[in-house]
Image 1 (cartoon, rainbow over the protein chains, first blue to last red):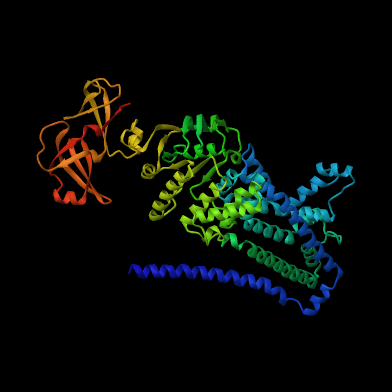
Image 2 (tube, chains in turn red, brown; image 1 turned 135 degrees about the horizontal axis):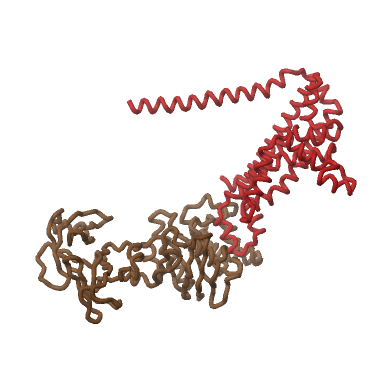
Length: 274
Length: 359
């Protein structure tokens, strides 16, 4: 009797998991697939050849790559400090650089940046002395993407650094390694999966970012019109063919990019984590 | 031939004192075991000696030269942590070569020396394996080779066999002991295992509450604990409370309820003073036959019999609230037909009765 109940309970548990997974997967396929059925190939290729669409692809991917590179450059040292150093105010720093930006809606991020960088803002005033004006430029697109995606990267990388066994570092120090050698020979290679996950997340966030970009960069010029912003404007104006074509391209290129990154890193890190 | 000295080292975390004015001297070529339970300060002591964490006060000397403020790499101490901490992204060869490469030793010498260590440590055939492909014993050897290839002044081992199965543990312990004698290296071995301590130590120190409670060779510490903590920590089977009935020179008579024991001691004790009496089970002779009246001979009743490994532990009630534990092989116990409630005669060799002042 007991055995029967256990078997039934296990099957019910598996069944529930399968049902919910199936519903979710089917829904995801429906969302992604529906795009392809709501346009015609001729309408799609017509949009594809439009200069606006091609420029927006370049702006989106160009700004996302630059933002991700900057995210990488700034977040790795910050994550290292948060993971390895003990100092007064560490908690506050974590809240400011990770928790708060993570909880802000991207629109609020954009507003903060705009207030900061406008000619009357603290940084804007300073930059104005050098005749630099960031809002509504390509730099604003990059900055918006950077600001929105960096907390994710810091959070992932910090977690990866935390997971590296402290004893490994200790042994390396006793063998004569400097903190920098310990970092580039051990901590970083051993955290590569976390760094990769953070990068993928940052890149995904950057590619799809709209709220902060719209407020800080506007998206009305060819230098600031990212694909997400153009999709938004197109749907507002009822240009559904354009919106759908942009959405398909964005989905497709993002999928290809993330798959290539994952495969590349899987190949180069399988030795460590096998 | 290197010596380590710690002079009055202390370390506190907030209001919690972890190391309390601890002094320690480890002689050249000896295998010194630091034995302590969890929270005794073992890890803090280890990190301080390695230079990975600064002591709040005190000095660290290697061969009489102060290294208190010297970086871990410059202290030249080999370190094998509990989990071996092999570098997962490097092969066995690269793990062993790590320290030499940091020292900018020429490629040719690195190759020759690492190959030599691979041969010496029986790692042939696995030199290009990654750590995840190794067994526990192999990992241990790689960790040792990696620590020893830099020719350290001393080797620090933190619970080095605790992650191994019993069979490999025995083998590795013997290998470590042989290695230490062969290389004439000063070895500091940190453990919580008293059995391991007895097997490995030339000398040992028992760490408690940030202080070394007792130094000595294994026999001294095991048979003559200086404090109640040491006696309890080393699982002294019989710890009884008594008081000094008579004292004449070194000779003392101790009263434990109705039982009178005679022994001798170098402790400054006065008549009527309470005392802790420690008796190892091997020092108690049990017989079912009548024993002639004499020193330290008395009668007891078997309260219970418990199997302990290959032996039996016989618990004998000697006073209404004092029990003596005696170890006996199963064969002997069977021959004597020992049963629960049986009256038995006991005699204790006075040389094995050890006294500790009751605090």
